[in-house]
Image 1 (cartoon, rainbow, N blue to C red):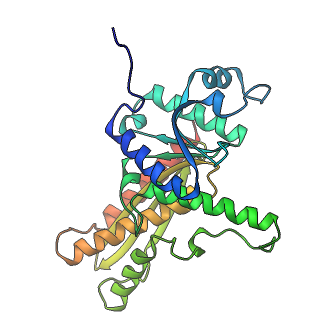
Image 2: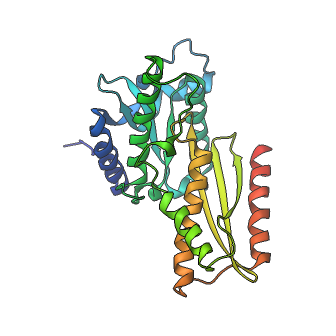
Image 3: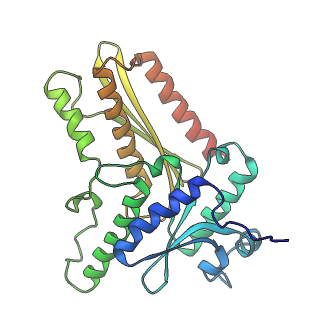
Length: 277
């Protein structure tokens, strides 16, 4: 009996693998699926507790992205919708988060939304891979004295690498022409699940008791190239700009001020609830 199995078990994993490979090869990097946690990091005498250590021995990352020399750069986890509802999946996710946090491995968590194109980039996750290696190059140049030590890494300052600039410009242009009442949306950000999950709400006033809402969530551990707090804000603004276009075409019904207030309450309640866990 042939008992061989496919490494990538569904179409989402295949698409993620393709997106990662496409971006990584620009930097001579490599992508490996289903790598055991204990093979990606040295867990011996690492400070992990018994539960984390045991889990690291038997669990794997969905994908590992490495440098040219195969040194591990960061991990990528594809979180399907059931992760939010399945208690066992949530526990395993938090174990991985904790292990990566303690041992310093950047971990990017993504959903199917990350497979969509953003700006000129074929996928959001591909853009994040490119930004990661550009960030690494920035710090390497800084260590070599090519960049002043006090100059901070700002992902949006890299020429041609801000895929969200058009969404912000669209809102500003619409405001200038009288199509909305704010030049930029109000932003509300929260974090929960021990700081690993960031949420952002972008609220745009488009008329008397008429509002558009963009919502986004991003999860990552030590992925400093684009902090999840900044990424989810940009994605929320992107979402509200897309809704603004639909609103102008009479294809979208706006929210009322009361509905906006309900959104705000739900966000605060979710943050408070998770911080009490």
